[in-house]
Amino acid sequence: MKHSGYFNQFGGAFIPEILVPTFDQLEAAYLEAKADPAFWAEYKQLMSTYSCRATPITYAENLTHHFGGAQIYIKREDLNHTGAHKANNVMGQGLLTRRMGKKRVIAETGAGQHGVATATMAAKFGFDCTIYMGAVDVERQRPNVFWMEQMGAEVVAVEDGSRTLKDAINEAFRDWVTNMDDTHYALGTACGPYPFPEMVSWFQSIIGTEARQQMLERVGKLPDRVYACVGGGSNAMGLFSGFLDDPEVELVGVEAGGRGSGIGEHAARLAYDDASVGVAQGYKTYFLQNRDGQMQDTHSVSAGLDYVGVSPILADMHETGRARFEAATDAEVVEAMKLTVQKEGLIPALESSHAFVQAFKDAADMHSDQVILINQSGRADKDIFTVADAIDDPKWKQFIIAKADEYKKANPELAIAGGV
Image 1 (cartoon, rainbow, N blue to C red):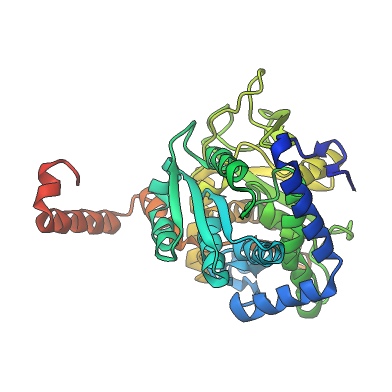
Image 2 (image 1 turned 30 degrees about the horizontal axis):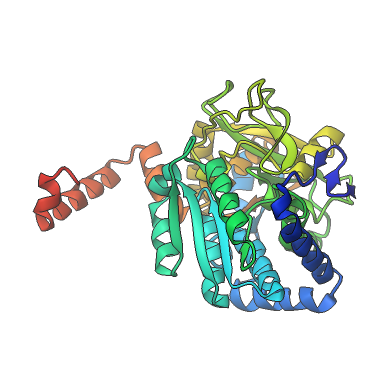
C-alpha cells in the first residue's frame, strides 16, 4: 500500500529542506526498530508493566439487551495508563527517542490526552518536555493541563488561528525546526509527513492485534463490524489494523458531526462533502479548506476530534471503500455517553462516544448472532466540565458557583480586580 511514504495518492512528506536530515534519521530509526524483534518485545514488556496491557474486551450485556440486535463488545483502551490509547504511541516513540540519543520531546495536543501521555513518557524516560495546545483547548481541558504541568512539562497555549489542534501542530513544527538536533517531535496521531502516519499506526496496532485474538478466544469468531472514532485517526488505525486482512469485517470510522453540515459547524472530512484533497502540515489528504487552500474553522463538542485533516491511510481506505465513515452530532454523542454510563457503568470519552453513536444505530438493525466491537479509546474524566455543561446539570453548576465563591473570599484582591 505504501510507496515512498504514500498510500496511493495520499501521504508524502512535504517538509522544508532543513528538516530533511531529521526525517531521514527518524525514518531510519523507525525502520530499524520495526525490523528488530527485540524492540517490539521491549515495547510490549513496557506496555504490560507500565500501561496495563493487554486491555480487555467487555461484553456490554445491558446495551445488547437494550437495542435487541447485535452483541456489543467494547475494547477497553480507557484502561491504559493516562486513560486513553495515546500511551501506546508515546511509549513507543519514547523508546525511539532514546534509541536516537535525543534528550527532549515536544508534542501537540487537543483533548490533552496525548499531552498527558507525552508528559508521562518524558517523566519516565527523563526527557525535557514541551507541549503545545490551542488556547481554546487549554481552557476546556484544564484538568489535563494541570497534570502535564505537575509532571514537569511546559504547556504552551497557542493563540494563533482558531487556537485549536491544527494551530498547536503548526507551533510544534516551528519548535522542531529550531531544535531538531536534540529534540524529537512525538506527533500524536496518524497524520503528518511520512513516517509518522505509518509509525503511529504501527505502535497503535497493538490494539487491533489484541482485539482480534480476544474476539476469537472469547466469542469464537471475528466481529462483523468494528467501530472507532476518527480525529486524526490513531485509535481507528490501531483497531482497524487487526482486521485489515479480514474482508468480512466491516471497518467503521465515526467523525465529529458537530452542530451539523456546513463549514465551521463540524470536523467531518470523509463523512460529509465539505472537505477536499490538499497539502498542508507536511502531507496530502482531505482537509476542510476553502478554494485557496486556507484551512477552515472546525467544531466538535470533543476537543480531540476537531482536527482539520485526517490520516492519509484512512483517506485511502475511504477512497478504496475498505472502511465506511459516518458522522455523529454533538447532541447524539452526549446522549450515547449518558446511555453507556447508565446501562454499563462505563464512562467513554466524548471522542470515543462518537463511535458508540453509530454502533448503537447499526446494532438495532442487526441480528442477535452478529457481533460488533467498539473501541472505547479513552475515558471521560477529562471531559467532566464539558459534559456537565452539555447536560446542564444543576448540581454541578451549584458546585462550581460555590467553589468560585470560596475562592473569592480567600482571594479578595482577585475578586476586586475582576480576576474571578
